[in-house]
Amino acid sequence: MSIIDRQNVIEWIGSKKVRWLLHVVFWLAVLGFYTAFFGQRNVNYHITLAFVAILLPVTIITTYFLNYELIPKYLLQKRYARFFLYFVYTLIVSFYIEMMTVIIIFLSVAELNMSEFHPSNTNAIFLIAGMYVVVFLGVAVKMVNLYNHNQLEIERLKSEKIEAELKFLKAQLHPHFLFNTLNNLYALTLERSDKAADVVLKLSALLDYVLYECEAELVPLEKEIAQIDNYLALEKLRFGSRLHIDDHLLENTANWKIPPMSLMTLLENSFKHSVSQSLVNTWMYICLEVVNGELHFTVRNPKIDNSRKKKSASGGIGLTNLANRLKLIYKENHRLHIDDSGTFFEVKLIIKSVENP
Image 1 (cartoon, one colour):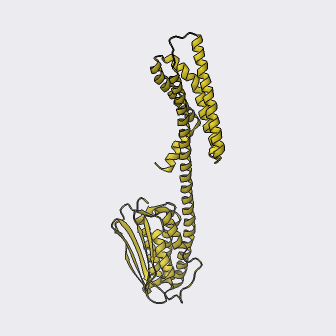
Image 2 (tube, rainbow, N blue to C red; image 1 turned 45 degrees about the vertical axis):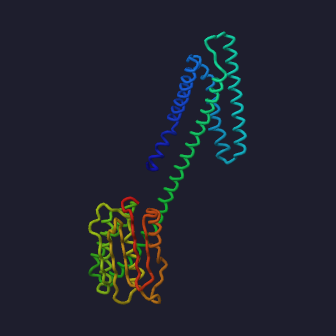
Image 3 (tube, rainbow, N blue to C red; image 1 turned 45 degrees about the horizontal axis):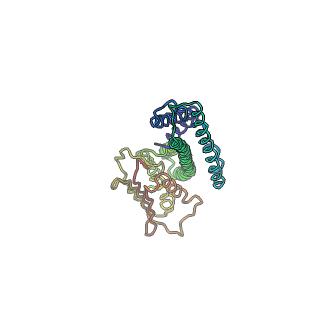
């Protein structure tokens, strides 16, 4: 059951009318059970019913006093010593009242010469003990309800925190990506103005994807691949023959879904921090495949001389945000591996479960 479904059930149970109804049903069930149990022992149900009905109000008051006075004021506030003291006092007082009630009933029965009713002391003690079983049962139910409510609240807060973090990371990621793409458009319009219309068309598709499709937590993999094609087309127009792209993109995407911009961010990061800063012919290897039921996305490109590498204030934002997003969504069901040790830079994303993060 989802958090929202559980919350709806608890809210329904916690509504005033339903809560009152459940309480009435519970106490009527207690009345019926003890009347049937002790009435069978005494072979006199109507007298036993009267006996239980007289003792039951003390049990009800004791239960509600513990649940709605002592527990909220002292136990939940971690004032354990005071709670224990008042708890013992409450049991002593209620026990005294019930014993006095039993004595008064016995005396009344004797004075009225009700020879058909012969309550034994053992039955009276069992009945009082049974009433305290009900008290402790009521307290236990209250504590379980409080625990469930607290757990639900913790889950709700965690869910809201994750949702807020995802929105924040997306809000950072989108302007970052758009800034780099607009820089590419600027360079393209300067170098190849005759192809500006095609550039604007592909950029429009990218903007539509980034601004609208990315609102969902997961998007169909085919949509991400379509935007990768658009992005690669823009970069090929920009770099021309200086750039060789060896891409192997998955054709059968089935029903797989991924977080939006997850693959695009890795691709854009490689272009920004390597390919776009290269002064000579360069290359890029891109591979999207399924290996043993896992989605593997690999981007590899040659490293450039650090002395020529331009530092950017926005450098690394996209990759860092993506890592945080993946951790929030997939937790341990993914791996993001970055290899910067050799002559090339490689980043590989492995998602173990695409459809059910």
